[in-house]
Length: 193
Image (tube, rainbow, N blue to C red):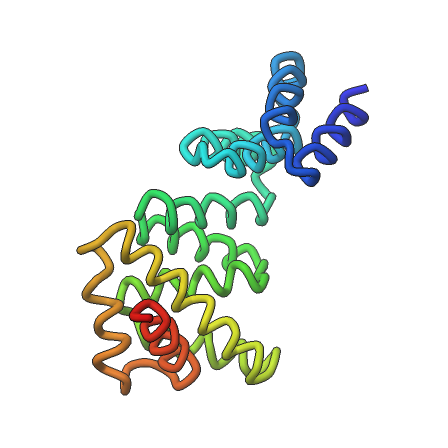
């Protein structure tokens, strides 16, 4: 019964009804608090409703029930990076994911983003070069543009915490790989329009 209800909650989340899914999942989790999948889906529903602190906590409960869920760790890192401004903690979380032998396009993009914000351009360049080697120049360029847009949004949100890093990416191009530099400049240009 719980599995059928979880499947229904998944359909609601995927169908754009996170509030309904949230109610169903909370009901399931009251009687089965050890259900990692339920906590993870609740986190997704809460994120969709922009209840980021609650989503972060729900993801933590999912990890407590099943610590090997790398996708959940990546979702927590994204919240730390883009919603709370805890850049170092986000990067530490992502490093744990890699230490456990897991990598995904999302985790790599978040790691490039965190390193860019923190001004760690050598790390950014190495990751970007790996993306280009494995996925090609176009994928690398697309990821660089996505990172630049996200960095600009984070800069607007957290102000002084990231202004120095973002400025360095534009003002000190020798420190940044060509596709990332182009992405930062393109995002900066679109911000001015």
